[in-house]
Image: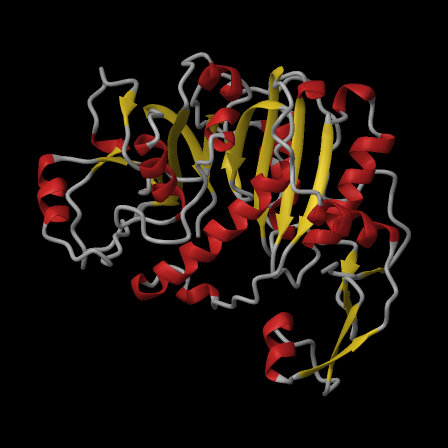
Length: 387
């Protein structure tokens, strides 16, 4: 399942998607949403040095359009629909072989955790334009790089995401200064052949199937990537800002699962910036929400953020200033830190309804059912891109 794009020109020593090493940046205090010079100069949309050709190799399979007019907008689904020819060619690049080996290596959990080690996990799809900012934020983290492992699951991508990750891994692990090298940098590929147009991704009727696919992707990733790390951090591939000290700040609370408050920044009517809550999946049950749940059918699915479905839950922006750490019953996945033994105990992301929830909210419900605690920080802010 390698997205085999072809380089237009010789790749530079450092991939185009990577930020150049920089000195100290501002905005280091917890939750400060001021822009900083390092990230302000990082474009949201980067021009990759790679382009799609009329032929894409996905782990030994050739996907070729039957018409030369254009590449199909959704290659895997198009292949199933007969819009492209699929031929087995048996040729695998070394990168393809490495990703296949990663896919087969389901992790063993008999190892003793390495103290303070951190595994960053990011499921990713068609995210090439955000990779520069992603790595710029990672590089600003105030955490020992030799304690950080990082792993990506690329699913159903048809842009340059996978090739750019391969180039990034080569640079970080082989060419970068020692202080920038990760403890481990792994890439996995698993396609679920799920296509949802971007303008439909937030439709309420699409959420159950969409979130189930996301749960499957998360479970595929952590069951392969988790080794001897002590902590796991789930990060979205399209965050816009988080403080450099955030990992240590969240670890200091010593909670099983903890999340900051993820906002989004938009222009108001008069051109001023306004911050609103982006992640409505982090919430606390209330008496009203529990009463609503008591009247649900067993197979009713709950999802947040829709006027047509009032759940009466308390979101992170509903807490008072003195409520700096609050227990939660649901969490999102934009920036979620957990102790690795939560996953090792068998708590993953339900791809079935668990107490009317799936994916990250289902994970929180399942974690609590197994005796773990989930918490949120209403006034510790991070920022997501719009969309």
